Image (cartoon, rainbow, N blue to C red):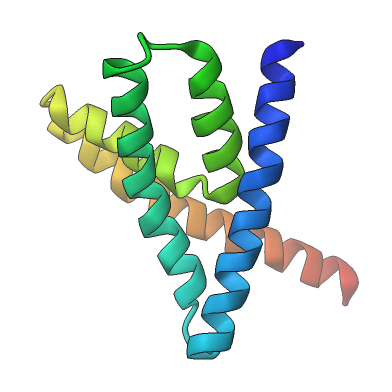
Length: 126
């Protein structure tokens, strides 16, 4: 229960941070390109590297800090950060074929799934 509360707390803060970042990006740069989301994804990818290194090297691998900051905060802020970290781990283990498959597969299959889900509801609503 304690870990779930930490995840919920971190997720709430991360979601609000995402909302503020995306809406600020839209106000500053317009909506022709999703600069806010792009910025969130890049910032989240950098931040997961920082958080995981801090947790591993300074906080003794604390599961509580990982759940609060990574699963919670970054989970609410962006899931792209988890993808980036997991891909980095594959590359560091020199599992380059797996890393390439994960990168290309995640992007292509996720995009196809998004289009499929949209098309499904569009067809049902028509």
